[in-house]
Image 1 (cartoon, rainbow, N blue to C red):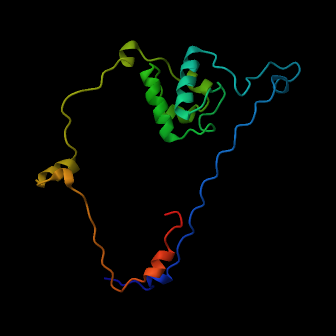
Image 2: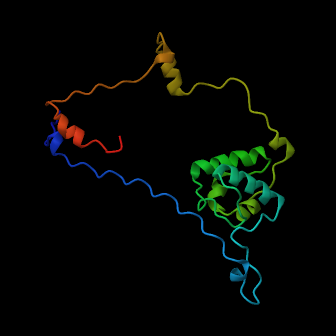
Image 3: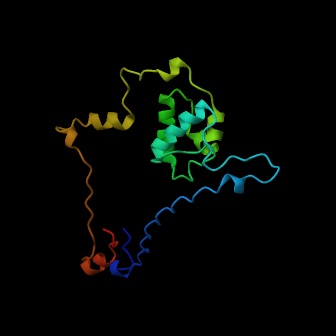
Amino acid sequence: MARPTARLGELPLPEAPAPPAPPAPPEAAPPVEAIVEAGAPPAAAPDAAPATDVEAELAQIWAAVLGRERVGRDDNFFALGGDSILSLQVVSRAKQAGLRRTARQMFQHQTLAELAAAAGVASAAEAEEEPEAGDVPLTPIQRRFFARDLPNPHHWNQALLLTVAEPLEWPALEGGRPAWT
């Protein structure tokens, strides 16, 4: 077995990551006059209200998931603080509301208006679909676990014991601990 060539206290430690910066406060929407150029058709204002029933339903879902009071039809889900986990919550709530959306669509169509136009409404049968019931086969790792016939499988844990070839230098270890722990 190969032995380490450096002592623990001599190894360089990575820099501790900086804490994330707080999100910038939302800017006030410019007045509509500043958005609409003379003679041009009016573009949607940043907080434009949802234009369809599907947009209105999705706006309520987005607002609830993102913790916002309201969401405009041209707002970008990820710019409002959404992430992949929150997008799954949106997909789940949309399904409960009878709207067919996928996580992939959340990334492909990031504004409310684009997402609303991307897919149709689920049928009544799909919207009221009951969870499946019945036996589910064990996975291979589950079969292996239960084949061990442990006396208390509900208290099972995995432990690992490490041994060191040389005495540890505790001050060096303490100095390497991140400040936030």
